[in-house]
Length: 348
Image (cartoon, rainbow, N blue to C red):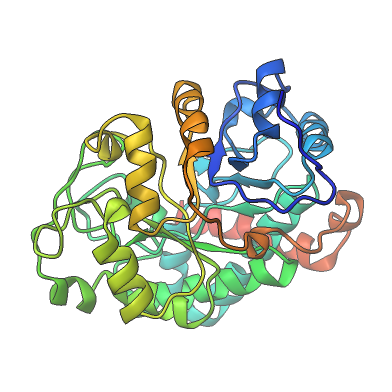
């Protein structure tokens, strides 16, 4: 059995793993003690209601207090926690509102970021894997209504407002899917897309929101499982050209790089799970999403023999939060929910 001082030990893990159900299984308790595990990514299957979620989070924290707890809570079709949580709209709806009334849209987006973060913080989570910075160019449903529009400058304004609200609550943000998933037809969950455009073309369009949000201090970036053959023959998440030369050196990003899930077909071409992990770490990823129990079992012994160093993960740990009982009485919370109802009626 792994031993871990959960109160004092630094989090040196690299894997973000998943859980099977709504309570911890014996093997999961063992896995969470492994120093190679950095955190947990929650899915809809892990959620029944707020009380159950709070109990699960409390159980996880009792094993290791400083694990990073994440969820996809973008809104629309990508919202894992729904019952007892505010139903957030797809990002596309904010873009439609922005086209009609930019100022009110930005105010609402900022408040929605704050509300989303406060609801998660009240249950003890650290972050939502958002915002999506991809452009909706009408080419792929995997982006589609998850995007904040098709114009880079509008995406920058809306994403910046959303991040401002999230950070106000004490939660970090992650921009995805660098350098942009909106210009390919394929879904990287199902295959490995290829984008044949030049680096200059990508920089002039898809990368614009990423560069702007990095300048604004976004805490993390998630690369896409896409090959850009004009730049490198490796998928972005396995490419040191993209992650070290372009993202770090040229753009100047000094935050954390979190891989997209290594179970996706866009990552599978790299080989078995240990190969995927090694390639991602060598390329410049700091944390790796791996929602496969088989994969976790394969990778953890390999990590014990490796010598990868982990950066400071504290920027991903949420700071702040308030009890739900206080949150639901706040004027800002109530006003935001009312305006979301209006948004749904007007742009549904």
